[in-house]
Each structure stands twice: as C-alpha cells, then as structure tokens.
Image 1 (cartoon, helix red, strand yellow):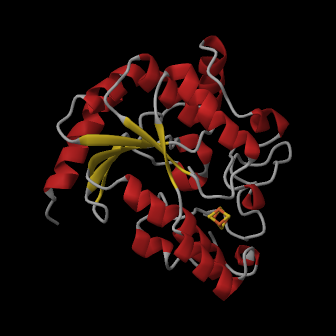
Image 2 (tube, protein in one colour):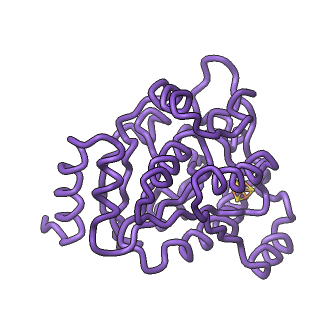
Amino acid sequence: MTTSPLDATAKALNQALEVLDLAGRLALVAGLEGRAVFTTSLGIEDQVITAVIGENQLAVDVATLQTGRLFNETVALIDKTEETYGILIKRFHPEKADVDAYAAQYGANGFYDSVEARHACCDARKLKPLARALEGASYWVTGLRRGQSGNRAATPFAEADAERGLIKINPLADWDIETIRSYVTANAVPVNPLHARGYPSIGCEPCTRAIKPGEPERAGRWWWENDEKRECGLHVPETASSIIPTSSSAA
Ligand code: SF4
C-alpha cells in the first residue's frame, strides 16, 4: 500500500507532537505553513485548547458551529470566552434553506424518529457549516481525547483527513478528564455550567441529556439510539457517516 503525502506528513507530525506539552503542540501547529482552524464546541476540553491559544495569541483561527439548537449556557459561554481571552470565535450557522428543507421532509425534531433523519439534521446544522469553517484550512485542530469513548480510543495526535484534504490535529489525545479538570481549575478557565449538572459532553439541547453515575462520558449524546459508536459525522469520514446504521461529538 502506498503512503500519500498527506499520510506521510501526518505521521511525521504525530511523532513530533507526541513529545511536546499542550502549549508546545499548539505552537508547533500555529507555526506551520498553511491555515490552522480550531473548531470548538465549548466543551471542557475545547475550553482548555482555547485558553492556550488565547493566552499565547497563537495563529490558530477559532470557530464554532452555531447550530441554532445549542443550550443557552453554551451560547453565553461563547461570548464569555471571547472576552476572557480577547479572541474572536467565528460562528458558522446553518443555511436557512437547508434547515427549512429538513423541517419540510422530517419535521423540526424529526431526528428522534430515525438515524437517517438524525444524520440529515447533523448534516444541515453541523457538517455543512463545518465545511465552510474549514475552507482553505491545512490543519484542523480538535479536542478529541482517547478517553471520551471506545470509538475514540485510538485517537492519534495527527491524522490525515483525505476527504477534507487536511490534517487533523488532536493535541489533547492523551489527556484524561481528571487532567482536564485540574487544568481548568488551576487556570480559571471558564467552562459550561452544565458540566456540573451531569453533562460531561454537551451538544445540541434536544440531543443531549445528563448522564447517570458510571455511564460513559458520551452516553448522554443521542441517547435514544442503540449504538456505542454514535457520532454526528464531524469526526468520521463523510462517506462512513452517511452509512452509519442504527448507531450512531465535538462535537
Ligand atoms: S445534534 Fe441533534 S439538533 Fe444538533 S444537528 Fe444533530 S440532530 Fe440536529
């Protein structure tokens, strides 16, 4: 099997990132040729990355997917984070025509009825805005961690995203949730108050519930679907997401 240039670059970056701390990892990416975009869902791990970017004024664009179905607490945190770190978090909204077409075909809350309908909603409200957020980017920084779910257990520090033609950078891949919480406390990083109410992973309001003690971190996402690999399609190849069966965060 031949290795693509994107794969080769990702492999080299993966090795370089592994030996650095978080600030070093993000500084390395910021210094590379080509635009780097960090997409934040305002979750606790994403807030750690935003804090490091903001405190060091790194050349990484910060963007968020304003799906139109976020919790009020999440929307408020976007403004607060911008003020705290003196940065711009660019909001990417869904197209009205896509939202209207979805509602006409499935109903505004049709995502509860089938996996197909749920993916169609995520496509209109997340995947299409994400494509616009990543336009022209060479590097996509995410808050993915190996400990978030079994689906993410092998997350590398850098990986080729051939469909999007860029390299995905996961600088928190080896951080556990306790390290994240310690960092947030020690550095007074603003976080979503929903975390303290049983929401370790926060997405759109109608698709996120609090988890029970002992449940996996992402058990509250699309909880009505019966598959441990539930994802919204942001972090799986688009062709794969479109065929994910009765299964299923940054988001
Ligand atoms: S998480 Fe729910 S509301 Fe948000 S885009 Fe996906 S299906 Fe729609």
